[in-house]
Image (cartoon, rainbow, N blue to C red; front, side, top):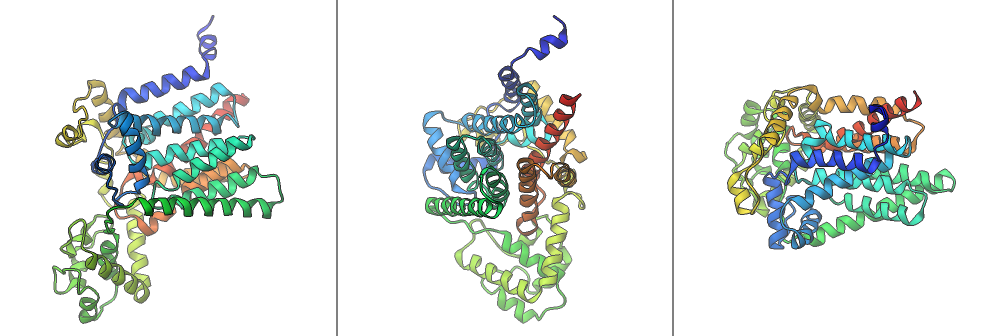
Length: 430
């Protein structure tokens, strides 16, 4: 038997297992950052805060009761991603090629770097792909299970409903056997019901409300971009926000730096900020957006350009989380092993080097996704998947505060899934 024959005789399940094992060798037991520890604290205390959507903390609470630590969550988010890609890919290529596509996506450095960390972004990608893979099944029960999985994914990120809308309307609607207006209308109703349900669940789970710091950044950025404003009017808007500078607009203009978090220095804020501060900043942002829409838009577009990696030097700093980046004291407090192998360290160093290349720049995946949308314009599944990634990326125009590749993880993943399927189809035809 030749080498080629031996390779082609490997079962798809074995390919998936080998690929996932390679992932686990690097990622074990699951990397943790400040956001991860915050959710683990919520899960173990049973007191849920809305720093991140509390649905994930509630899910971790249930899993941690059975097997403590980050590894079960690592398994959940990575296995759902592999299973989802495999289910989607086998619609286009044979089982073995679909398994190779799934492994290739999981081990692609931009996906590997994020899926190794216990984040809502990582779990959202896994569940969204699994849900998409299930809803394209012709069996009604499996399809309904896929809708339930997509609904759960819709509660794992603040902007997740923007991403699940194309998946449910385009993908689910395409599976229904009625005329276009009826099937897409019903699909939209399904999406709306699921979105209201998960938003209600997140709201019901919250025990402690932590106001967002984004209004402070937007107020400072809008002040920096606006024409001269009446200082008395600005001070009146920010009366309860504990101003550091008597002339906030002058300070904002002197220190403006898009997508760097600099705007928080304008205020003496501590997390969580007081309710009075939060209400003042939200009201000030709304007022300034109404009075200075052009300034607000310029500020947001400047920020978005940095978030996409088109400007600024923030992307030259550390972008990926590796084993040596974790806080040993927090790991010890959470009873998580602090050591890591030399192989894990070497892979982390390779990811650090790759993170300085365009491979980790969101703009690359915007261009790739747009090109693939054109290529797959006649296929509702991949068109919906790519539209989902682009829609979530576009939502960062409104709510991104700093360059962070995990915010673009869904876009990169959907683009790489479609690219892997396109390549596999080309080789299959040959």
